[in-house]
Amino acid sequence: MSVKQTPFYKKHLALGAKMAPFAGYEMPISYSGINDEHASVRKNAGVFDVSHMGEFVLKGPDALDLIQRVTSNDAAKLHAGKVQYSCLPNDKGGIVDDLLVYCLEENKAYMLVVNASNIEKDWNWIQQHNHKGVEMHNISEKTCLLAVQGPQAARMLQPLTDMDLVNLAYYTFVKGKFAGLDNVLISATGYTGAGGVEIYFEDNNGNADLIWDAIFSIGGPQGLKPIGLGARDTLRLEMGFCLYGNDIDDTTSPLEAGLGWITKFTKEFTSSALFARQKAEGLARKLVGFEMIDKGIPRHGYDIKDAAGQTIGVVTSGTQSPTLGKAIGMGYVQTAQAQLDNTIYVQVRDKQLKAQVVKFPFV
Image (cartoon, rainbow, N blue to C red; front, side, top):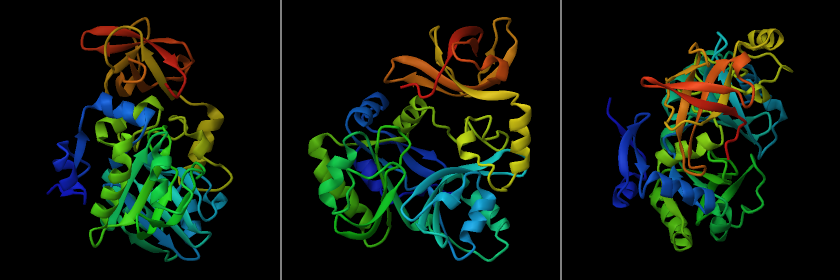
């Protein structure tokens, strides 16, 4: 399968980015180095090209009904201009994908933002449940998405628009003119926990270059930097945000993953009866965060053990936290071992390294 390029591919090359295939796209992994890029976003602002993500528009009188049946959160609470984090459960109690639901027009039009590697899988899953002829449009290929993240991001971008970005409430969005371009959707969302916005616009007539250049011409002198997927991963991990394919997948339930807050039993949806039973009976395992006490970095797939050397779980994500200067990780452990401050051991090659269960977020 040929690897695709986002509309910003040439920009990344010109900036000397280290590129690598990710979710079917040639993507920038880092520019100046992960630690430097990470610090830029935590302290100032940085720009991520996330145009590889998937976007679907669902329209019609039954659009909300379809979303309610296939997602775990309650989309009926959304009004125009509001965004919701949710997941698509499968029929076996696992997760097809996690996603964002944008309410474009109450009860009539919604945009779903899904993970790049799951675009086809998600589309087919939703289509399979579309029994009432909801109009579905896959606009992934023609949609550009830049995430400008960090505490200074909205302030930096404000001169490029009349829309109030500085006071944009978390998980809401506005649509209007940005950098001279009409119909730009800007939401106070992101995957870093550092504040900032995400900017959606259509890729045509050189829009990608226009927006990128406008953002950097105003932000560059203020220290705005391009950021790769390497720092995106360390930033999201410090917040305890789940990564699909690592921390959640077709075999993990949202309740096990600590996503009970997006699992609403006020409605019926795929696997809702199964989740209700799980909640009533109690969970066998839970996703926890942990900090390494012994020196060593936990990696996806490493076994987690108890003091007796019995395997009690598995690491799903791990890294050296640039902010904390220590190794952190996430993983599923038996519920009895999930309490805060519990000592666990990560099997790193032939050693069992000591770690401690801590609260999310790490920073």
